[in-house]
Length: 164
Length: 142
Image (cartoon, rainbow over the protein chains, first blue to last red):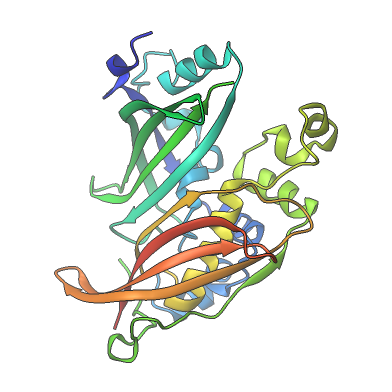
């Protein structure tokens, strides 16, 4: 498997509905009782039109806000994320998959009621040796945009396969 | 669009300032709640039997739960809607029974085209000072 040929490949795309129930439940799950996430009145008192989302919400948003009827064409052509394919291949010889780094860049505040579009791709793949084990790093980027096509959040993250 | 105003006062913040600490005793219930609310159902986080069969002492915490907890401390301090960048490196697993505490230390500030920015180093540590997450943030100030 020539890993470098996967750089630039799409990992997925989707339409996300930012729903209040999922945002509130997610905020509680990360121990955040700040009323701006739960109560419209508190959100409006702080200058928001609707409750904003907690900082890491978009990372889970594919699970939380995907409705099947308005999804865009699958940029992987039904193959699924090539990251999964690469990890499955590497795991055939054992090892462990780790989440190494996660970064969010916020361009605009995401608020409940918004409909976002996201697109993901692999931006880099490289290997390193550590303590005699081969570590394979897959770096990915997800860009979330608003209805006007402006980026609102960019996620940059890696998954690491640590060889057995 | 929002009219949310930054909570921090640029002039009142200095390098070395620390944000209030958020501490949390990690329980298995937290992991189940986070799995349900995020959709991450990796059994290593919720299924004690499967985790032990895999050779682990118990289930362990989702890295993204830790990042969510640390993010809460950042927004408690800087206000929701005021983050520009939030990034972490996952350094150690978290385990039920650990008490996780946040550490946010201002390292600089700058006036930029996107506004007045406070830069801080971040960490999440257990009760023995073991670093679980380390990272940085850039937040807006008034």
